[in-house]
Length: 245
Image (tube, rainbow, N blue to C red; front, side, top):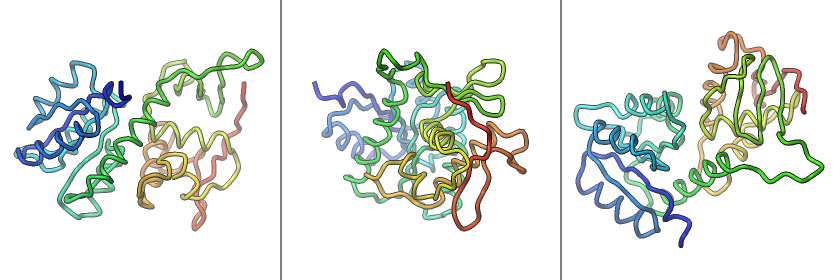
């Protein structure tokens, strides 16, 4: 069986011809696909529990795709790609900041869409799969910083009380890169390699948006960050004291 057949992709678009085109494209690549036209149908399909990725149109009739994406993100870390025909940079950044993992303009190159889908699914699978540890390795690879525990093996971020903090795949990989290199300035290009991979085209603001989202989750005051600091013109530095166990 092709590995892609285990992944059901949910397409949410109110244009019948676009839904048909996306279904044909994704099914030809081996994916199982369900296509719906509105947010209510999207929520019903997500409740079934076997969707691996959502392709969501930004401009649905009578609905805001960003609002729908944000509602999904409150309870799920399922990868979300937002599709739009509008070339507004503000919408692109806002979409990523609120909920999306990727953003693609219509009309798009079908091969690029498939590459982005594969990349997101690979990252999501890697985050959910348990790691194989040798006999001389600890049961869990953990990093402690500022009252937080990043469990790399379990792919979880835990607060001081041991409660999990929900991170998207991109957020987790970015935080992992930072805690593995404390007190080192990492450029955007270096961080993009960790969060997006090299197989798809990316844009510079992706890292900035993920940093903003992380700060909102782990900093006491996101407006005056003490853990993730900006090195203007260079990149970012993780200044927290990190211990590994």
